[in-house]
Image (cartoon, rainbow, N blue to C red; front, side, top):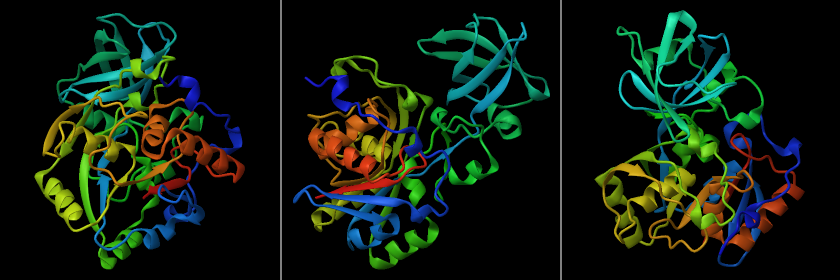
Length: 342
């Protein structure tokens, strides 16, 4: 049995990256070879040398929406709204940061006379309805929304975040957090990899605000993941099996790509998939599809570090994190990266 304490570590505050590296590919890269246990300290652009012709890179092409709104309750108390998921054109699930939790029927007021009504509380999220008949939630976010940068940045979003907290290949709107391993790729690197003979395909996992919620149970097997929506095409399925038949590696870019691929193969065979997933990957999990992964350095005690530990091994993972701290790598969404490969 694994406990939450197994995944904890002490991280100096100065190693939390609150702004991005000057260039996307200029971040650092810790390369870990699972077979011979060798470790190398590189820069991210070196990934071009580590990925071989015939390998398949799988990216999450979700696009982050401006999901944070700031407003007031009827009483005048401040409200910070963070959308978890759009249910339809005018209804959402959202987290609310308020001094006193609102009740069903209460109204929340935002700029430009925009009003949401509370329908009900659904576990940790609120079901809200936009009351303006002539607007959609998407239009509201375009007008007054803020880029939902992570809470550990401890700052307001800036214009820089509108581009750098988005991957260069972002396409399908719906996420409230970025698939951060993909932030290290720029167009030039993608073109060089393609010219080298590396194959690339995309899936979509709409990342919810629940990704920042900590694991709260001591026995991690009791943890329940939030649900997120996945779209994985037959074209990608065919590419995965063709790659494996030809001896190439399936390299997942980010934990969300790992979760999507393994969700779509939970019954032993990868299939086209359109639906929700709440898969929780932690040590002891048997991977069906993913051979290698690119990932950032994650929060202590989070479901994300547990996924990495499932792939690299718990002892290896905690040792790698200890080494990254000693070498002063940058952590979390705007931080440095790790490439774990056989």
